[in-house]
Amino acid sequence: MGKITISVIKADIGGYVGHSSSHPDIIELAKKDLGKAKSEGLLVDFRVLTCGDDLELIMTHEKGENAEPIHKLAWDTFLHGTELAKKLKLYGAGQDILSDAFSGNVKGMGPGVAEMEIEERKSEPILIFMADKTSPGAWNFPLYKMFADPFNTAGLVIDPSIHDGFKFEVLDPHKEETIVFSAPEEIYDMLVFIGAKEHYIIQRVWRKSDNRIAAASSTQKLALIAGKYVGKDDPVLIVRAQSGFPAVGEVLEGFSFPFLVAGWMRGSHHGPFMPTSFKEANPTRFDGPPRVTCAGFQLADGKLIGPRDMFDDPSFESARRKSDEIADYMRRHGPFEPGRLPLSDMEYTTLPEVRKKLEGRFKKA
Ligand code: F6R
Ligand code: MG
Ligand code: MG
Image (cartoon, rainbow, N blue to C red; front, side, top):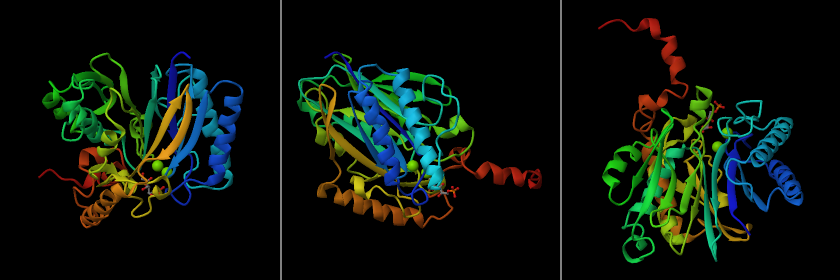
């Protein structure tokens, strides 16, 4: 078998109820559509999962990254699902379908995309993270922990196969520029940028010793595409694990501390990033708190053996409890920062309309 591509393409095409979860009929419809593509030979394999109100299409194939037929398949599946979502009057039906003319690639059209083309190893454990009620910068913190922090990833110190470290590609979505940093030598420079997670987003990580791809994230920011707030991006992330990459447990350890991310209610608040099982990823309190789930797979000639629901483990109970404590604490800030996002990040929410309304009332002091 040649190279295999893992494409994770996701969109919110309608919430059930409100923005809290997904309707089972939409999932069934997507499974049928992808099942047909598999029987026709376009896909090697697929799984349809959800995280909150987001529909996650996990596909393997041999067409490479940014392949038009794969993107078209995802796009058509989202359009088909949107028709049904409209019939069921699901909330925000077709929310992430920001354009009506497909032109070869879903990037820039609303859906989020993470893809990586790999040479499958003798055994290939893959972890796919899915988030709801937050933005792509949410991956910066755990990616740093997994691939650059020896207090998180023991292998960086004691496993010769990753001791050289990793390279990080960081995107500035505002300027549409990327820069590559090499860890550990450049971590202080890199942290200046990736610490500003709403502005700089880690989009790829490679192993330094042989340039093998280790992680790929979705970096699409809906507000930058639409020019206004149209719902949070709810990103996805693909990570390879074991034998020359961080171990599965080192990758997951990056989520053991529920750090604050931007999103939550109206995409305008800071909330803890809560790791949950698939069945607990239905954010309800104040439309949150933001959720992250992880689907684990073993690849076998492109076949997806899995998923295992990786956060369905009592060892993440304390992170969930801590998330609830943090949620209480952050909620008590009400409309005050840092409960609410800083003004710069509110540019892309509903705030500009309020400011416009009051424009004439600001007098020179
Ligand atoms: C956050 C999110 C929700 C909505 C909120 C208001 O990503 O989607 O918190 O912003 O429920 O929704 P609308 O404006 O549709 O009533
Ligand atoms: Mg929604
Ligand atoms: Mg969502």
